[in-house]
Image (tube, rainbow, N blue to C red; front, side, top):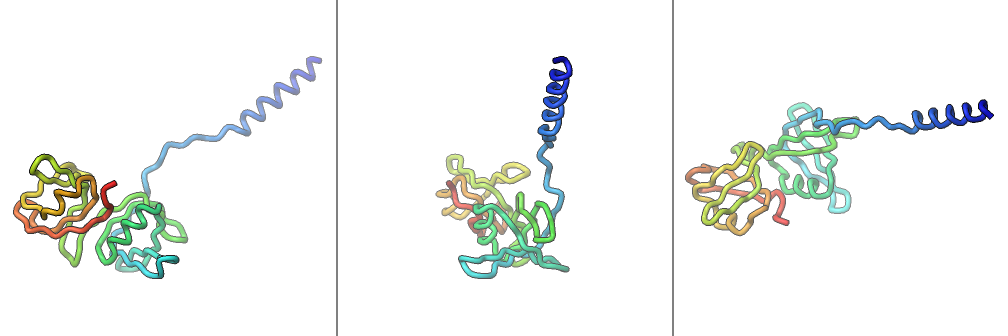
Length: 161
């Protein structure tokens, strides 16, 4: 009887150890690439690529980010994610420039008559924003031109929800 109980306890201990899965912390994306977004293919088989000076990398992203990256076609973008033999699995991205002109990537915030962009580094006030931005709180956009004085050009990266 004692031998039987010992065998059962060993079996339970081994099963517990074998079934225990190591829990790991969520890791930050280890890779960053900066280049020009290129979109090819059809609406049924679309390929999003990031062209850098020395290579072209296929980008894999969730549906919302894929739609946003498609809107950034032809722009310089910094992507962060995980690289493997298939390309980069995108975790996040930031618009950097359009036609060589720098842009600011952020979420539109409207407070009374003031419009600002919420960026990774904080709020950036827009001195003379396009009137259309006042109707787009919560949208992720890129803005170029003088942020203090305007005029500004902009593009929608992700519409407001």
